[in-house]
Image 1 (spheres, helix red, strand yellow):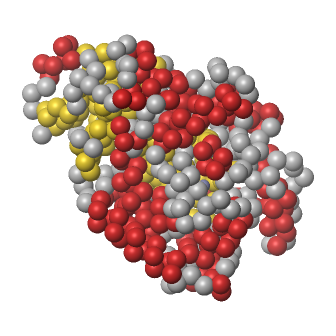
Image 2 (tube, protein in one colour):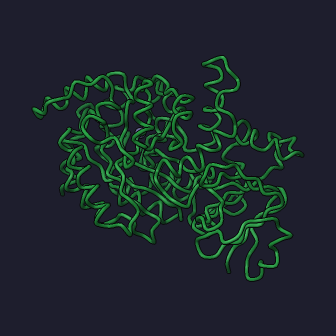
Image 3 (tube, protein in one colour):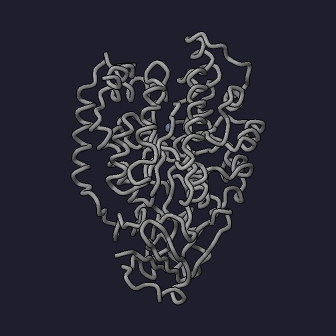
Length: 467
Ligand SMILES: [Zn+2]
């Protein structure tokens, strides 16, 4: 039985960034695609053979896109907060990460995938260790995802990452893609950046039938990034160019182009923003994570005025501390108004754009983030009969409700790749209680066996990855 979706109103951006509203909508799905979207009365004659999801109280939107996260880090949620980033990473996360097994990553990513579905996310762009196990978790619950073939110079090799790309890119019924995850300019050498870029260009031109492989990196996240990158390359006796900013650094070494997905972009000046625009670099903004970690904040109003290849990310669930993208949407729409004393900055419509079609452009995935005919049937319905979404008698209030009042748990139904995976707020593919128990056990084991000697033991991964 194929699906159809009905509701009170459908809102989406089309691929040209035009905002569309369809009253009393009906969406007809065949296999994994939306084959028709229109007013119920006009296309209801095509309903035979379709199970109808939704009702007249539902707002219909495209599945949201989390354009930067570290999905499996659910296992570290809430275990070390309110401390400096360096201490958090070096004394808390790295020692625990060194003990992670492939199964831990699978379970962590499974929880992250379920949490994503429950809050209306249908595509995730994740960067983490043991990416094959993240891919399995993402697929097992029916999501789309980009996993990361990790490159950290001195810990993982580019050769291993390339093998992961060759084996898994566009695999598992074309719902899983692989990025070359060059962690950051201060953990990846210039030589690795250049070699990865060269491989990527060759791979993309030799495999035109596949979606393009992208490079996923953290860019301009810390104030000392240039200094740290210079020091890092000196370790390998690689000359460092005379540049002032991380964006100009990547441009100088030939990495800044349309195949780069850059997360964060906090420390960027006007020249950098113009460079990112001119080179058509893809950007994921993670303002809620930036705020929680006490980072500086990215100049988002300026960035989104300059380029539309921009999406929103939650960042990892141990630094945000949730994968509910609605939290980040609301924060984005509110924070810059306060910062700049300007209530017209980042309108509800712009927040919606970033979480949907902007996210699709930011991760380079055609046919998602919209409800246009022939796009993927990744569809979310939201129950409007809620106290915090009332009044809503006029449709024009609903975008405002989306940005300022909605929460992940308002999501009622989620369809991904044409299949229903959340029905009446219940997950269909997995029993969440089993996963919750598994995570408790994993985190308990990791935390209770942590010792002082584990500090800075990320290198332990080296041996594990080359077993
Ligand atoms: Zn990150």
